[in-house]
Length: 424
View 1 (cartoon, helix red, strand yellow):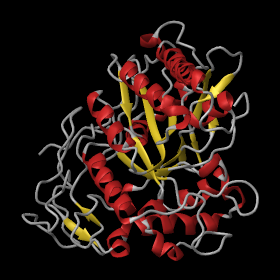
View 2: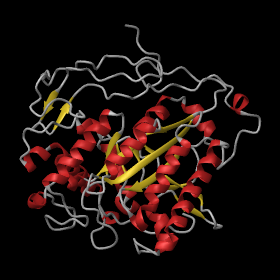
View 3: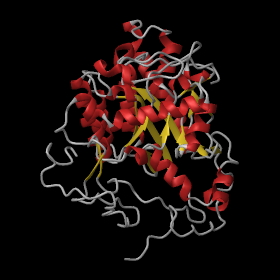
View 4: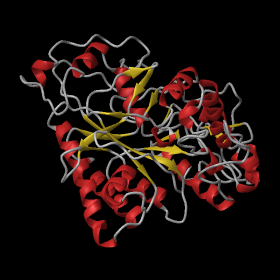
């Protein structure tokens, strides 16, 4: 599913229930079964087994707390931070390449969870394209096309399973418009709000739009599940963040940053992708497959076959250098962006898989979704995060972590992430 990104500058329920929902208890809108269930320290709480409440036309449903989400904990005095790594996917959808299902399995096999930024138009069939009314464009226009019934069915299956396995479903919006002439970089705050609302709507009405009334729903309330995004081509971040902060989002990953500890902008965590050493070069490279491709084969998505293995190795080794620099240094989270594409013969998919297998099973490493990272950041004492932000790229505390974070963090206020679980 193609999506075009600008060139980085050099510095730069497996089935919840059966299709008919047989055996599921469908509650009322006020049914909050399982909401009060507390998670044990460091362990994930399973979703309540019989708490399925259909929402709207049944495209989505409330099924209780998301499974496999560990409870975030505050760092203790002198404790070294974990090394977080986030693997994220722009325009996530399942097509004939089966890359969504493949990387779901890769994540499961390597103790990882990931973030999948779903393009809303991938939930809208071609024959219903006029329902999409993009800002500054005519109805039914999309630079990445739409989908068909089989593609929507396959994508829904992967979204359902991904969420049940603890992964996050974000958004990559809809039509993927870049550059001048109505690109997202020219959109106002109100236009961004409209685009966000439409992306949500296509996810919440896929059953109506496809006629697949008997299919199992997505197991989450998308109005609550959707807390973050990455903009097309990394454009339009300023107005998007203003819109997103008014619509309940918690983070954005549309920028370019160094490998330092994140801070907030417009009330959102700025979890931008980062610059890492570019193996074989003197400049740094953005942690996204598209940008590696552009700096290797230009705009040709299928360049010289004789160079493809080298290009994949170069991306893998660059990401591993960035990982090691953080792991041995300031422990800043490493943010990586990808597409489900077979550019240059799939060499970048191979590179990402090798990185996942190399880093996610290491001691003190947590390969997590953006949601889990945001939860952990929210759970920390703000003074601890301020201290972490004083460390430069690759800089480890000179006197060691025990001394650097020796001050006892303030206790977490009752009811916020990181606070002690309520006694039952």
